[in-house]
Image 1 (spheres, rainbow, N blue to C red):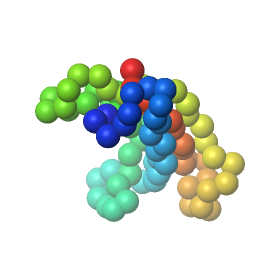
Image 2: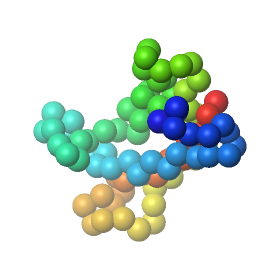
Image 3: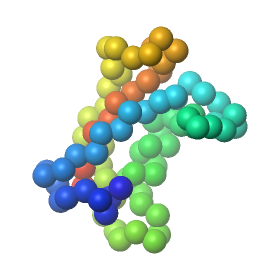
Image 4: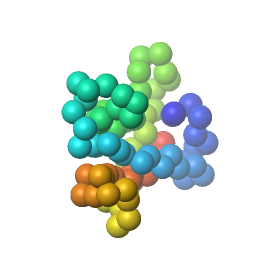
Length: 81
């Protein structure tokens, strides 16, 4: 994702973080991931990528979402560090 974005602040990556309630061992898609997993993956890109991960600049729970995700879904905004 880091390589696809233009330099900050010209571009933002919007993540819809769901289903955060689902046990990751159940597989997917969709795969259950916690907000902490998004932070770990997006702020520390893999070794095959150039340095310069992304930083989360906003994080909130949406007012409207699917019934099953109420209280567990998140939206985050990321840009280059």
